[in-house]
Length: 185
Ligand code: ADP
Ligand code: MG
Image 1 (tube, rainbow, N blue to C red):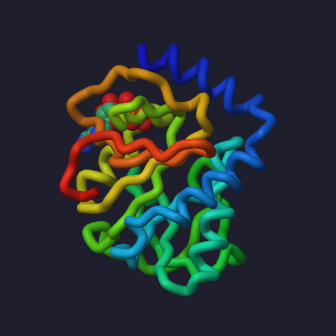
Image 2: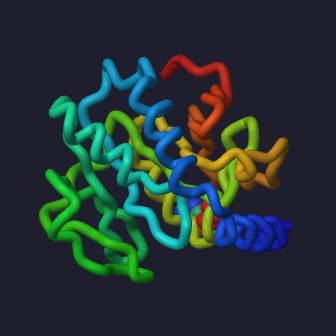
Image 3: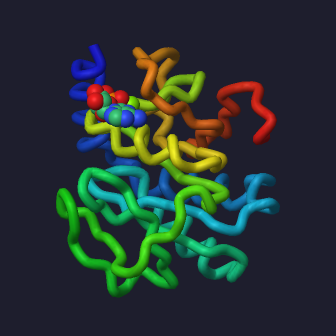
């Protein structure tokens, strides 16, 4: 069930032609989130394979000088947050994704995590690549979790299992979706 949806949406994403302009709009919407006022430590991801290009968000956040930014480094099937002060100096890591080098930061100290996905549903359920990295990682944080997605990646409903950790908000080029009634918002 998950696998069929994953395949369809990954193929759609690979061929999506408006990735750059949409990613810029997502960055504009993201930077306006009122939640950023209570936020200091942010984990983002480095884009690959036509994922939402978070470099536009990263540039805006770095320029503001108000935040500590982290990118994940994969170590033994786990994600470790490592601080970044610019996007140079990253190296190819697991699955060819660019990673920082340095000491890991405690996940429980992250205020906000920007989560990639193959798809989200309106309740914040997330379909990833099928390895459960973010499910394992988000169990360790008390963060506000923000999905970023092109509009076609947001579907009405996705199959969800006990171990799946949902996101609190989804930012698309056209919408900010609040996925549940939650004290974090
Ligand atoms: P994804 O979230 O990447 O789409 P799944 O939700 O299907 O993928 O998770 C893939 C696998 O990751 C699960 O079958 C499970 O074995 C593992 N997994 C997810 N969360 C946990 C967890 N908290 N502890 C241990 N294993 C987990
Ligand atoms: Mg999952």
